[in-house]
Image 1 (cartoon, rainbow, N blue to C red):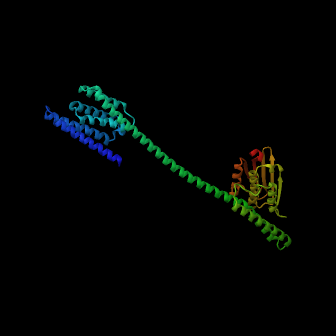
Image 2: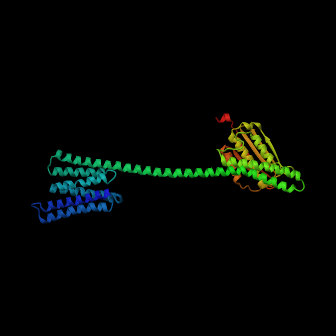
Length: 388
């Protein structure tokens, strides 16, 4: 709205100045009607030149033509200044300078030099005092220059505000994205924790109950023993479920504060069934000195490998080995199940990979049809003292 008012005021001022110049032309003594008409048409042509220069945006479309049009206006108004020597022509001569300072962006030095030279020529032609004529002209240029600087500062401020608003919008969008990623990550972690803690127990429980059902008639005593063991597994699974739902601390695990060997022996015991499935554990005591994160990862890796083998391979035996070799801990879980010719990574296998990779370790899965399945991992050995 402010720019529209400024533009309207400029147009009205130009029209008023042209009318004053036309009045000077027609009231000029000792001039023929033909010359008066030519001068009147000339000022209108200058005005039309200025209009065309703005209407067709020559500054952006054809800069060379723009400078030619501007030169014509400067020289033309300079001629009128000499011929009529009126206040109206002197004020009108300011408009090209205003345009050069406020519209063109980068200052066109050649146009400013032309403007100054035409003004000096007009002063000399009128035989006016040079000092008296230069001071108003230089004062006018200084004022226009200051206005230009103020406008540039406003534009810089507006651009900075726009950048700030854009940065704020990007920050808000990024914040929302981070929140969403955090929610997704937490959901994934909860799903992984539930899968790891409950999946093993459910598989062991199913296996024991099926075995109890098969020997119920032929060996009731053994059936009762297996059912009692299944009851213990169900209680342990409920305990794990409560821990997973109520706590879900950062990578908290069953063995985070206890003995890893005891936790692994519990896994082996839950899988062991007389006459059907055996589970052999080889454990290196040096591994107990590793940091809790490593022991927790080993526990979950073994648990998932055993659970995955029972679910998909129908094995008769497991071999679990956890040993320190040099600066690494080697973990191997092998079964003699049916195996597969092509390994398709389940949710559990992907969880094993992610946990081990977080510890900068490596893991590979090996299997052939009718040759069993193996999970073989290598994790850098770090003790509590080394991690400080």
